[in-house]
Amino acid sequence: MTLYAILTRLSPEALARPGAIQELGAKVSAALQAQVPEARWVARYAVLGPCDYLDIIEAPSEEVAARASAVIRTLGHATTETWVRIPWERFKAIAP
Image 1 (tube, helix red, strand yellow):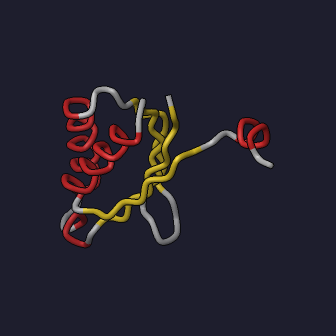
Image 2: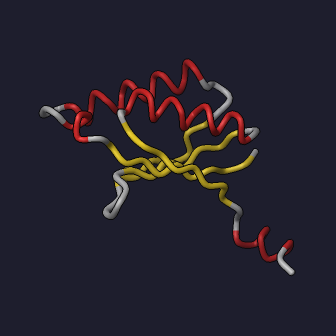
Image 3: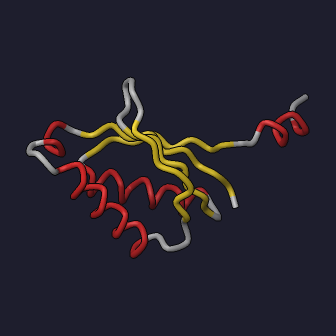
C-alpha cells in the first residue's frame, strides 16, 4: 500500500464556534471509517503555516486516497492537497 499526505486548510465556517474542532474531527474520522474502509489513518498532525492539518493515510490506490480527501473536504468545510509519499530509501533506489 502507498502512503499519502493530505494537507487540509479549514474554512472560517468550520471554526464558527467553540468545540467545533473536536466535533469536526470525530465526524470526519467516523465518515472515513464508514465511507473509505480501505484507507488506514497512519498519523494526524496539527501544523503551523498555510495549512491547518497534515494527515498521513495508507491506501491501496490513488482512487482510494482521492475518496478520503473528498470526505475530508466535504465534511470538514475545507480545501485539501494530497501528495504521494515515497520513503527516502525507496526513492534513492529508483532515482537516476
